[in-house]
Amino acid sequence: MDNMREKEVLVIIPAYNEAANIGKVLDQLEKPEISEIADILVMNDASVDNTNWLVKARGHAVITHVFNLGYGSGIQLGYKYAVRRDYKYVIQMDADGQHDVCNIPVIYDRLRQKDEDGRYPDIVLGSRFMNGSADFSVSIAKKIAFHLFRFMIEVAAGRKIADPTTGLQGLSRKAVLYYSKYNHFDDKYPDTNMIMQMILLKFKVVEVPAVMHPRTVGASMHSGLKPIWYMLRMFFSVLAVVFRCKVLKVDENAGLQDVEIPYTQQKTAELKKQN
Image (cartoon, one colour):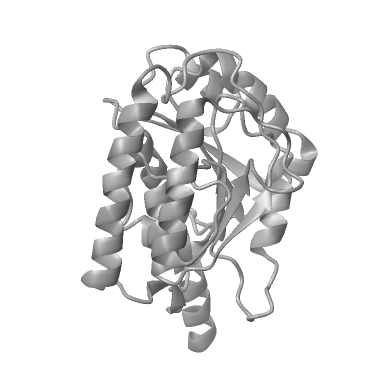
């Protein structure tokens, strides 16, 4: 299989029963300003509707799970795909239309912008709650969760993160490589816990204002009483991450280590030496 790609960005979209929404999302992603810089991969988590066939009919890459593995597992498999195909950046967004595709060029540009410390971002978070973000209303339960998780990150990591549960993120190859490995990524709800982990491991995490919309069709994975269970699970998951990183010092300073050379670049260098 040819691993060479002209585009350096892969947009990963986890989807579960999103037939009513995925077509509109793909319409936007197929516009020239996006399609010229990014390929699309839909992670179909054993949907029982037509999500799989709608994506295939549009000619985009799709991976379909035989069984429902959960949001985190789908995203991580997408990371493994990106690593094998030598993409330099990954941008992940939801299939329900909440994440406006106008955010993609903004995140892409930020990933390639070096900061005063000489480093490029490893993770760019699309935030709903920064100056410049579009208005976005949330429930009381979610507001409580946001305040709790912001507080936990500030206390444990010394960072203020405006939107600690955003699913709209851009990742460098270094971050994708780390996340793609066993036991480095939450297989269910990778949100605040993963942001906490990456900050503590010295990966460079930044935020940009984002445009997001409320879901209009279908049910969110955080609907009903699920936000309460999610908040409890995330609270203890964040504590576990803090213990693992600050007490056990697992993978200490992983974010400061050099990224491995992509497979295709290795082969090119070897051929040059031989010639």
